[in-house]
Length: 206
Ligand SMILES: [Zn+2]
Image (cartoon, rainbow, N blue to C red; front, side, top):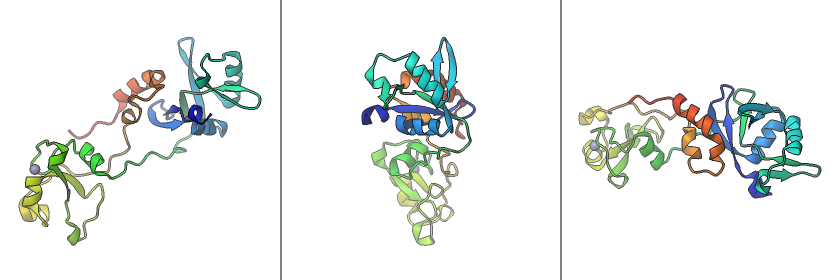
């Protein structure tokens, strides 16, 4: 039961853009509270289902695979693969954690001073405003830096070391949904929406 309810479900916003992935348990709870509808491909077209419609649909169209259903006292309900939010901002966006790897991802393994790409083992994190100047460990103040530039800058402000950032460090808006879903089981059901997400993804400055 737990494995069944942990299966990933793609979440679309009201514009049918992929914005998140949640477990089936959370998906059911969003649908039951009418914060989302289930999206299912029937006869070459995507239809949306409320919880009651979905229960009826599950009864008249039982799936072959046990992993495709959850048993309740009265019914076997199909596990949804995709849900569509019916309200704005009911689902908290996944905040991207400020980690070494995520900063390297954001900066694409490029030293933000000299602009060259390096292996991660040859990169440091640099506080643009050094900590002893009161610089915080935030997305806006931490960048990827090569060891040479890091040594040159030392504990100075960039302009004191006659250095410039190649771009202003920003907090990423949210984790691109593509990176959440690659290789997840069930993602073949999401192809249409992920293709759409690919074309609609906000592009960086470069
Ligand atoms: Zn460098």
